[in-house]
Image (cartoon, rainbow, N blue to C red; front, side):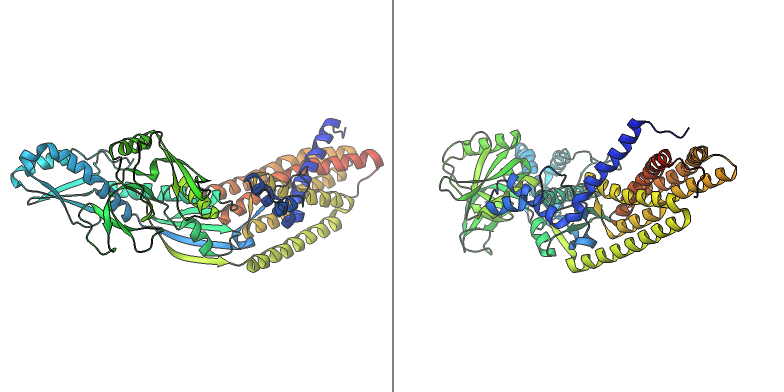
Length: 553
């Protein structure tokens, strides 16, 4: 008998209703988007009458999830950046000097005096006065080398150490350089992703290209410069001892020191020790706040290691100045008045509220380990995106209309049932994309257009099978039941193979290819659901009401 239990019918129609409700916000895209932006702003503390008015544009009781539009549909900013991994080599050499000095000091009787010499950025040159103690010095310095942390460099050390007369020359080994490059690019990727996500942009594309390049695409931004402003600064925070003041940047700082300008005081330069007491890498939190005079500032807090070093330094250097340095500029150089335990403090300066908020974001996200050089920058205007949307709409409407007409001319009333299921199918696709926060790109629209063509394939198989069963002189009820049962295996086989292809495209592809794979995969799932369940329940309900003696399929 042709029969579907009541609970199954309720579940099928309930699923369709939920999908349609989830897809509905996309019909009022701009209004819902403004509502969502206002709600997010209110949650962040910007509770103004204007934001309240924007939040009221859409009922809070209804879903407000939207399908995110990709760069090719919405417009936005595109950057291709190269990570200057050589910067990290220089930082490693700067940090290595205190270790070399400390390990050689107890052996002064053998090696003599120890002096750092001018050297290339990726090397450290150390001169000892007693050349006869070179073998002992090389033994001690080589003891600083550590195993390279890399799956491809098992057993190799991170330092190459050689001598040239009384000069010790250190540099990173080849294996360590490769491992460092890999870590630097991966760290840059993660920091860029955190910075962009924290300023509230929608569905950015951030992926590695080649050995040391990163592709960054962010929909909705007005210009590439706006994107560069978000990620272009390294936001490297350090606390460095102050040696003295300099008259200009060209003055001699001395080996192991550097001259940096003051951020607030024009023409003022500080001579600082290159080796920082604490760095931003030991920062665990940074929040915008106000100082005791009501001016915008940033509160910060170190991890236990940073807090201990910060506390020890302030305890030992009461009465001495120390500099808070951000991106090679001295924000302030206060005199240490007392021991500062706990590892927390405040950064003050001539900030606006917006600047203090952005600085806190950058500090929380962490410092970029190396400078980024932007090789390519491009802004895609919203007009081009709108043209793409319009072209996609036309293609979808043409494909949709052609399929509707074909199904009606080929299968009559049963074709109308399939057409209703097709409309529900499209709604379910957008409902699922809204639910998972998926991004719709131009290739994604192509996937939906393909889904429209494929969606009726399962119905065609079922209807043709029903025709064959009717030719075998079986009754209408038996023909419908056998049509669905015997077509099921062909439907499942055809859609599983296509779904596997979509999964492979998603796993192996990136960017637009993934957008196509997502819409194709979701379209297959919804197509099978509507063909096997939705059209069947409509046909069963029609059959129970009409009780036809024959079927005209």
